[in-house]
Each structure stands twice: as structure tokens, then as C-alpha cells.
Length: 362
Ligand code: CP
Image (cartoon, rainbow, N blue to C red; front, side, top):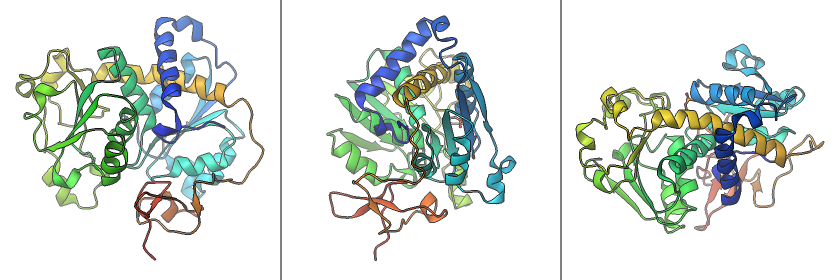
């Protein structure tokens, strides 16, 4: 059974296959009109979404399939206390593939342990958003013609911005990538991504405080929203909300062929006047999201031809099971009755498989 929980669940070659298929879908829309005829996608969205849920819905409809699901956990039996594990066991009886968004980090990984159909992580807390990464990669490929030899500036909320985390993991597997991190101290990229992803893969990273000082060297400016819903301290959000605002004036020194990406929604971090700049690719990026999700659905169904019958989880040997507890209060393992899973890191500490936070010291 093939799931997409983290960007790295797909090899570079599989990612390439999905992007190539998306490009073929764009060029030959009619050819794909009924390839999912008789199949059902379930969209289980415990957290708000416009692009991801509706692009999955639109993708499945364009493939000739059907869509069931909920867009608000309050309207499902989750509101009565049903767990993620039980929910996906039930939905597996009704659907062929599931796209799940959840406010708890690691919920889609739990789902993948109990479902006997493919699970797609459509965003889990501030952890990961691998289908946004596929969208971003397709957009970069279409706009710039390559996925290597790129200098990319990530600007804004790099702490809570799950799209940033997933895209960095994907780009770290390509050559000639340079990452520039533009964020206030409070919203810096999590250390594990800098040390265990960028440093380990030889990806140079630079941290700066303004976008203006690096604008001339960027091939991609990846803007993000300060994620109000993730803050515990309202005053801190108020202090940081306007940290970076992109204006036409700030683009004066940018390369003529630089592209501006944003996973959206935006609040005020890109002023409307920038939308008319041909380098503003964020609405083209949205449409690519539908095509790449069409390709992903096709590939996951192709790579998962049979349904396993084992109802209880069997964990890969790499995991240390039920020996540690997670330090992250937003991890699914600290709020639902699930088996705890940890990896041993190179420095001998333990990192949670659900959310990548460290284990509690005993
Ligand atoms: N980019 C993205 O995930 O948007 P939504 O929250 O609207 O799905």
C-alpha cells in the first residue's frame, strides 16, 4: 500500500513520474476523463481549506471519479469522540483513496496504519504538506524549466509553515540548491530541518533579516503567511504579523525571470499591486495543484493494486515502538491512544515519527 504522508515517501524518481504525468494531463486533458471511473476519493478535512480540498475534489471529478467526505469535523462522528484510527477504518469501507487534513501533527501517519487504502496527507498541523510540495515542484518546473541549480528565499513564518518544511525536504534531494531563510528570530526554521535535512545533504543555508538584501540573487521568492492559528501567545502574533510585506518597490532589484510563489491564502504579506507583475506565479501555482493531484491520485491507485487485509498496524523495523513519549503538545501521539513511534537520530537522541519533535527525557 502506497501512502503519501511525507515528501520523502516518494523517491526522487516517483516524484518525477508524478510531475511528468501532470504535464501529460495538462497537454492531453481528454485522455484522462474517465481513468478513475468507478473510484471514490474521501476528503477528510478536520481543518479549514479552500485550495487543497477543492483541488482534490476537482481533480477526482476531472478523472471521472466521485468524491465523498467532510470539510468540518463537527459534522462527522469525530465530534462524538471517534478516533482517527476508527474513522479511517470506516471510510476504507466506502472509498478507494483518502486525502486527510488534520490540525494534529502526525494524524495522517496514524491513518496510514489503520486504512487499507492509500492515505494522502493534505496538511498536518505545522508539520508537513507534501501535496503542496508537488504543486510547488510542478510550478517551478513549468516556470523555470528545472528543479536544480536554484537559489530559493523562504520568507515569513518558517517555524509553523508546513509547506516550507516539505518543500525544503524535496529540494534538498536536488543539486545546486541554495536556501535563504528570511524570518524573525521567533519564526526561524526548525533546527532539525536545518541540521538534519539541509546540512546533511550539503545544502548551503543562509539566514537574513530582510528580503531586500538577498533579492538580486533569488531565482524563487517563496512568501508565506504568519500562521495566526498556530500561535499560543496572541501578543506575539500581533508583534510578528507584519514582519514582511512584499511590494512592487522591493522587487526593483529582483531578476527579470525570478518567480514569486506563495501556497496561499495570503493575508497582507504580498500587496495586491504585485499580482500584476508577470513574476507573480501564485495563482498559476494554484491551478498546477489540481493537475498534480490528478497525477498523484492516478499513481497512488496504480501503486496500490491490492487492499491488505491486516487490520492492526505493523511497524517498520526502523521504529522504536512504545518506549518514548513526545514533547510536542500538538502531536497526535499526545492526544489520541496510538502507539508511539520514534527514530534514533545521529546524535543518539530520539525523534517522533509523527511530528519530528524530540522525545521526553526519562
Ligand atoms: N495551500 C493550501 O494548503 O491552501 P488551503 O489551506 O486553502 O488548502
